[in-house]
Amino acid sequence: MPIVLKTRREIEMMRRSGQVACDVLGKMRDATVPGVTTFQLDELARVELEKVGAIALSKNYPTYKAGEGFPGHTCISVNDEVVHGIPGPRVIKDGDVVTLDLALSLDGYCADTATTVGLGRISPIARKLLDVTKGTLALAIQHMKPGRKWSDIARLMQHYVESNGFSVVREFVGHGIGRSMHEDPKVPNFVTFEQLRGDFELRPGMTLAVEPMVVAGRRDVKLLSDQWTVVTEDEKPAAHFEHTVAVTSTGVDILTDGRSPGPR
Image (cartoon, rainbow, N blue to C red; front, side, top):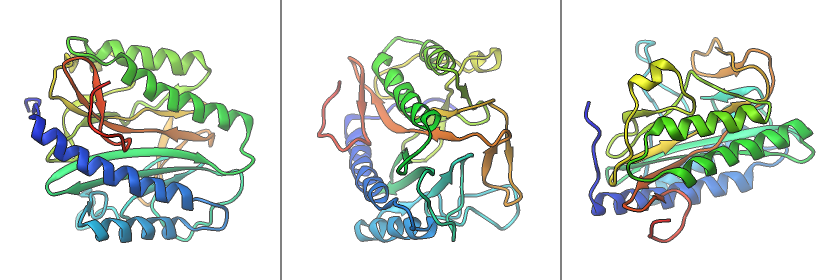
């Protein structure tokens, strides 16, 4: 499918969605303390989204398993869980690493964002993992500008992660976003010959969800029996940071960080 470029109005509509996403994710982050369950965090998001009339895009997200979709309003992944953790009775403990992943639609426009939180006395390797993953997202945003190939950005991201002794997950990538949560193009955090076949040039009006997923050990992952939760095979921790961004004439505009309008 062709990449859909957004008008200024559409980008501002996405910014409204992004501001809601930033606010709700911030409230979830503040509530992520020892003793809370992942279900309680998900319920917090459900209530906040309903207050403003936003739709949680994770809820009932379709799967290949007939008749069933994702059961949570958000994805909450703990420690070695990389992505798509199902909210439930799990109690968050001191030392845990918790990823909060929220996608929503407001007035027909989508936003997708994620953050990883370390609770209390996390291990030094987990602290470095969070810093490097967050830094990888910042690095990508810093270097995005019209005319640049995405593979140039992805190569920088992969090199930064691997030079710090970590690995980039390859089973999941970022994506275009707009009226739908998942649009073209695919937005990888690494470079392979296969990914180069789908390479694209950044152009003003592109709206992308950029989301590095980084693991402390090997990049190998596996799917649990719930058919959603993805974990590291070596059981080492994972981190995930994500922003929805719009490419501008001079660089990039982050739509999910709560800032007022304007490119950077």
